[in-house]
Length: 352
Image (tube, rainbow, N blue to C red; front, side, top):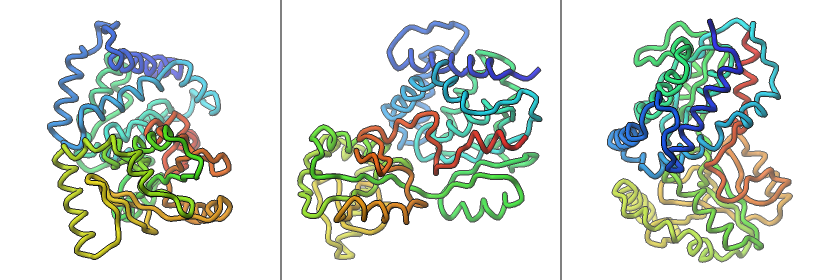
């Protein structure tokens, strides 16, 4: 017997409680679930497997999902959708990215809440945390075992696809999955719009948007738009608390390499010893680098951003007419924040 929607919500809310209590240092309430020591071991294993996945960044992702997966938030989110318990179940292949911890969980969550089943192709970079979350769900209700399958081989026997990758892999996805209903995602980045009235706290929070997960996420700010004449030293001072990233070897190596490339190419850039700022029209900046452009007016900038919307994941700032997200919130997406602006849940519910 398939899990009903209320059962799915209840199970996921219990998963959220598990994650939230872990993050808060609370004792484990449900002794039938894996111990928090086991989760600590999983985090260490994921870090050993992929040294970009610092434990503190995994903790950040876990805490965010613990805050989101509540009975009220899940129910409020799903109230906007026409669920039909009699919808025929289909198999949805999910090809996950692995750039930051648990990056594919929102896609998985949407499939788990839908009438469909998930066929999961994990990224080799993020193959440890997500299976553990599914183990917790199965411990909460054994019926979840029939709702998903993790495959390491070729994807077969699916009805629709959600695939996330680079611009290069997207071309492969388009070719391979072209005959199926699909969501194919490419490279995107976040941008920040700075005004002359930004507070010191807002600019300090910008550092979180730039450097959380080393800037590897599609919601990380890789480019700033600055008003003409803006003093770049203000940005350097605001992000200086993140200088500790240089103590991490992989970040240091990328910083040194990209700096050498800039110097050999004779590019103009500014450097504060752990991050470079370069005027550039591109959206995707290398690790340890932040691009910027100047703008003359909000109206002109709105046109520029609209023309480039296919390359932008979200906009950070405090300008409502640009649909901005507050500074410091880029890596705290909510349930209704769909990657690339494509409503994953609506896509799934139309497949019946």
